[in-house]
Length: 258
Image (cartoon, rainbow, N blue to C red; front, side):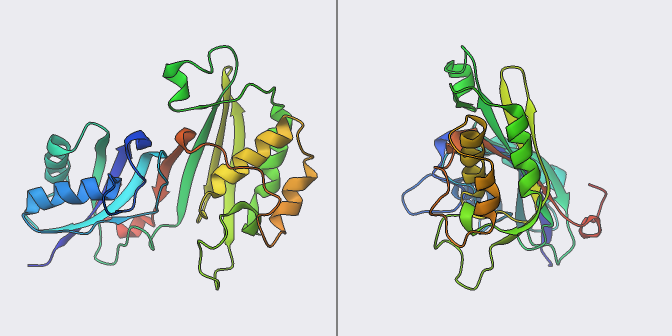
């Protein structure tokens, strides 16, 4: 019997995980989902994620590929998983996909948001769990200028952890949208690209915040986009304020409308 390929759209609070990828002796999102799938199917199963998130990073739209027996409809699989998954993981949706679907390699875009809290309540426990509390004054116009600078296709050597991609990788990413907005009590960075490198969003945010607070000139962003190393990048912003929001696939990979 041919297995049914299903895409799961997963939400998780990253605070209790050592990241997405399975690691010996560590609680990971992939490990938790695989354990739940094994419990339902009575067989070991390796699930595919659209990308790896670091320890502490959250998701409201991680895409996960699984293959199940035909008796499992996407709706039934979603209900069964949500009945046994821990409180910090939830399946928001499930879609039947065509056989050629691959959670990682079929993706055409990924979208992240990063959340910054400012002002007197930035240290509130109801904000600091999911936002980076920044006490420095930030210039929104400079944040917006930084976002416009990274738009387009660039080699992001200057904004990536060195040595985590193969030597043959050109580190090129195509940023289709990048924008900062003010929430009145902070700022949100929203960025979409075809791919992201390790720590790339966090390095971008850390550098942009330094520019917007006057610690470094905006010209540094352009210089980092042509740099061949990350020697001059600002420290990465904390992981706990980063969210994977959405993974996009070609519509013709879905057997039913998404």
